[in-house]
Image (cartoon, rainbow, N blue to C red; front, side, top):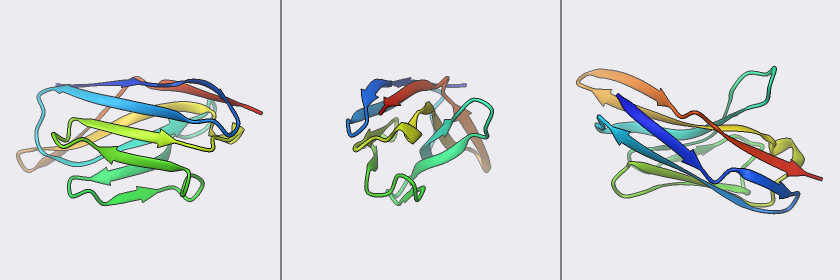
Length: 119
C-alpha cells in the first residue's frame, strides 16, 4: 500500500502564493505519473497539473503560467507552486500517484488539503 501525505494548503488573498507538497511512502515502485487535482464541493474532481517519470508536464489551461509542478529526484515527492492565486482556485487539492506493480498500473490518492483564496 502507498500513503500520500499532502501539506501546504491554507488561506491566502488573491494574488498571493502557496506551495503544496506531497510525500509518498510505503510500497513504492516506478511511477508513470504524479499529479495534483482539485475539487469544489458538488463538482467533479479536475486535473490541475501532472508530471511524468521523465519530467514531462501538463497543466490545465486555467493554471498555465501561474502554477508549476515539480518532482523530486527520488520521485517520491511532488510539489505544486501556486502563484498569482485567484478566488476560483479555491478547492480541496489532492495528490495522485500512478505507479507500476509489475505490468499493472495502480493509482493512489492523498486525503486532500484545502486551499482558500479570498478576493
